Structure formats: C-alpha cells, structure tokens
Length: 289
Length: 317
Image (tube, rainbow over all chains, first blue to last red; front, side, top):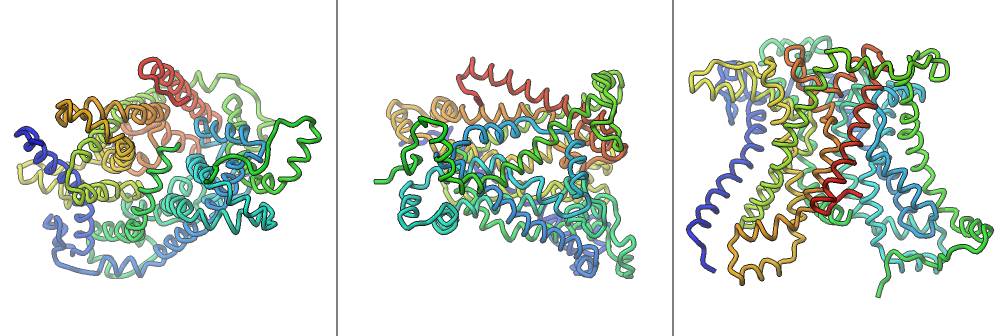
C-alpha cells in the first residue's frame, strides 16, 4: 500500500505530539523528584529543573524521622489492607448470588443498586448516619461506607455470569452446599477478577482523603493523604512534632516534594502489576457492561 | 460443550407459593450470602437518602428528625435569594461547562491518535505513561502542580523568567483557579478515558477496514467513516454519564487547591456544602443544596438520554 506524503507528515506529527503528551505526564514528576533531592540554595535560586542540584538526603531524613508521618503512613496501610479485604468480601458476597438464577431476588436487588448509582444522598445525612452509628473518629468510617462500589459489583457479577454452569453442577454432585461451592470452586477460579477488583479498591483506599476530612479529626487517625495536604498546602511540617535543627536548613519546597515522593512510591511500586491486570480487566469489563 | 448462565436445575414459574417457598428454602445459603451486601446498601445508601428529608426541616441535632420543625421549601428559597450561593452556582456551572467542552473530547482524540501508531512498543509506552496519573490521589496531583507552579522555585515561573515575565503566584490569583482545576483534571484523567476508548476501538471488526481499503479509503476516511461511528455508542454513554455529573465536579479535586485568595472563582457546590454544612453546621440548608444538585443531575440525565436516543439511537436505558 502506498503511503502518501500527507500520511508521512501526519505520522511524524503524531509521534511528536504523543511524545509531548507522554512527556507532560512524566516531566512534572521528575521535577518533583529532583527538588526532593536538592539542597536549599539550589532550589531557592531556581536552578532545579529535572535533575537534583546539590544532592542531599536531608529532606528525606527529616521525613523519615518524623513520628507524625509514620502514624499517618500506618493508618493508610491499615485502611488499605483491611479496607480492601472488606471491599472484596462485601462485593463478592453480593455479586455471586446475583449471578445465579436460583436467587429469586435478582431483579429487585439490581434495581436497588442501580438507583444508588444515579441518586445519592448529600453529605450531611451521610455524616449524621456515621455519627449515630458511633463511627466518627474511627477508621471504620473510612472503610465501611464505601464497602461496595456499584460499578465494581456489576463487573464482578459479569465475571460470575461467565463461569460455566458445570462448575456449580460438579459441586452439587460432590455433595457441596452453596458455601462450599463458593469457597472451594468458584473463588479459586475468580482470582483474575478479584485481583483487578482488589487493585482498584486498594488504590482507592490508599488515596482516602475526603472521607477522612469529613469524619475524622483525631490527630492519631489521620491517613497519609490528609497529612500530605497539610504539609504541602499549609506549611505545617514539624509544627509541634519535631524539633530538629535540620528543619532550619532545608528548603520548605524540597521538604514538600520529598513528602510527595514518599506518598507516591507505593502506587508506583504497584503500577506494573496494575497495568497487567487492570487493562485486561477493563477491556473485558467495560465491553460487557 | 459448556452452558453458561442457565440454572443448574429447572426454574419453572411456581405452581403454588408453597413450591416457591420450598425452592427458596432449598437455596437458603444464597440468600444468607447476599444478606451483608443488602444490609450495607440499605443502611449506608438508603438511610441517608431518607434522612435527606431534613432539607425540608429546620433540623436540630438534639431533637432529631422526629422532633425538628418542618419548614417546607424555605431553604430552597433561601438558596436563590442570597448572592453567595448564586456565585457558587455560577462557578459550578462554568467549571462543569469547561470540563465538558475541553476535558471530555481529549481522551477521544488521544485514542484516535494512538490508534494510528504503527510501532506497538511506542504505543504501549505512551499508553502506560498517560494512564499513570489516574492512580495518584488529588492531593499528590495538587502537590505536583504546586511544585511546578511555585512563584520562587517552580519550573513554570523559571521558564517564564526566560521570557522576562515576572513570577506569577498562580494559586493566589482568582483568574487562574478555574484553568488550574480543569487543567489538572485533564492531566490526571485523560489517560483513563483514552484506555476506555482504545478498548472500544479494539473491538471493531478489522474486516471493515480491509473492505474500505479495497474501496480506496485512506486512513482519514477510515477514521471518519468506520472508527468514529463504531465507538459512538461508547462516546454517548460516557457523555451521558458525564452530563449526569455536571454539577458534581468533585470535592477533593477542588478542595486541594482552594484558599482564601482564589475561592471567589473556585468555590463549587461540593466544597461549599462541606464548609457551610459540616463546619458551620447549617445542616438543613446544605442538605437542601445537595438535594437540588442530585435532582438537577437526574433531570440532565433524563433529558440527555431522550435526546441521545432521538438523534443517535443510543441511550443509557
């Protein structure tokens, strides 16, 4: 097939344009990374663009020695690990019956869930409910209210619908009750779907932010993202927590950038696995639903 | 041979209600398994929905819903009588509009361009990179932007300095906040949309392209006549969902950037509800505002869906 001159120019333009787009995603992160490793003088004189100038680990030392950072980090880890387990358990236990025709309440339950997708209550009624349940200022408030995402529920259900019927039949033949069938037969085969769902939920849990703003003001329960915002946007690092002299010599900018890097590292570590499962999952899930 | 979806034993319409009850009892485990999920939806989604009636009351937290006086539409009237809310509504509408006009088409364009790449490795590389910011929290995105927009140390002002322009404190000026909000959204979320459209494009039958090539169609023609019409259903569905969220720009993505200097142009309904509702404790008033927002969203989806069905034949329902 002949390639016209116009097509050749288009190809060049396309490659350049998409490279610029790709770079625009990467360069700001590099800038942040560079500043986090740079010293005070270099940052303040505006020398740092994509590579550290005056390499220093002081910013990171300060952060890693700050107790409030570790507390916030711990909270986020707890929320992510336990929250995601709750998410998966809740979503799976509802999605499975919805995929079986023997479950006669399929339609009403699906409608009930669909409505919540379109219409949801404003902040205050939710807040009042959490308050009445005694969940204010507890980590439960960050893990339970978001336990099931309607979207994920539908994707999970799609997946179960596609499992061949023989599976459940074989369970029956072997004399398994429904619980056993679910646990020993269906779940082990659901690993790819669970992985995809797990990753989506985990990332959401790690990024927990607005729920914490609404429901928590106890300093010991603040998740990482909230602490991050405090440091980056309101300059409150080391207010009462650390009395290090290093605080006087580092650039506040560098410190902020280092905190950002620390909060981003876990997501970056997961990203390769995410890529693999997520794209596959999205391709299957989005076309079906 | 495998059969899917069908039941494991005959599920006929039941002759008697006794038969039906026996059937349910036989599969009792399924009903028990589904119970936690159902309870979750009832408690955490529907209780608050019913609790929204406080929008029609003068809610007093000590008296509860049963004991608080009813005031009808008073809060809704107050919303439109006070200029404070009208400014916020204007912000929300403008930002929603900019988002629709600027942010919505970009993933479509990117997907179409990515689709034209012949070198698979480069295509996968760009895909991977462009998708990454979606997984970062808004706080991180905000932080990154603060870093590059900083007046003294940020790279943007450094570059501006080369052109002899004075450093600009972007986050401290009212005029920039909306652009920052939309721009950060594009940076963060375009990749996600691109992947969805790429998935839709991947589902197009390649025979269509072959046939068109035989008829002499060039790549542009193929894109216009095959690719775009084929992903039109996907575009419409995402468009309708986007419209439903017109007033729902997002609390986190705005809250992160808001400060006293830029809130005149930047404050939207969601951040106002947080400030006035949770902090200033105007419970009923802000619930009314929230209800208003949800109803408008619903109406927009309904209108959009009807129009979409009439013009393109696609709809959400």
